[in-house]
Image: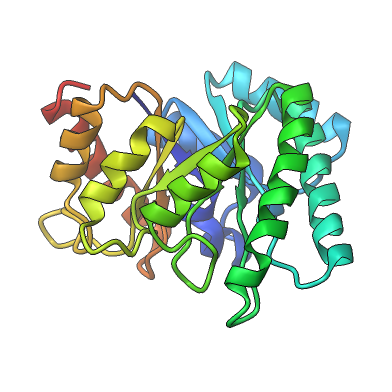
Length: 263
């Protein structure tokens, strides 16, 4: 198992002009000393081939693995035209991911209009099948992130149903530990791990002791150990405290639990 940092962990700091994209990359390599980076697509300064090649080279020189490219694409649009536009957008991000050498492209199943989730489920599955075909040509695995804020995938049951119905080895789960609304969160996470090439450790708030207030990362790393997970665990800080001060503390917590479980 290896650790990485999601660029969204510093989004408020970047938006305030206290840190630019290249500065974040240096911070990951020199201060956090993680092995990889998860790139939120909307935070990339450009998506041109020249920019992507420069980014890839700087990551190589800094010994950083590009773990995932993460656009906010989803397929819950109520019209066929809207869904096709989302498919086309996902394909364009696959082209970017191919240049970057990203193994995974994170997307959302989508957020249908209220009350129309059942009606729009099958069209959403069709969109993901179409994206899966392009992903296979690019050699990039599309990883679907569950989301409990009105999305198609509020829990492990709906997420695993989607994986079965899409039926492609190129579509898997981006397992964000903080997104399931299962009555037994940890059972839901464990049932999803066999289909998750990438795990996201979401942190919202840290206690003075350094432990997360919401999630039991001791239990989560016990699951990772039991399932023999060997991929990246990406820290994504989404709290309101100062990111420059808090992200290193959150990473230290993740590292501590990883070491306790033999990673």
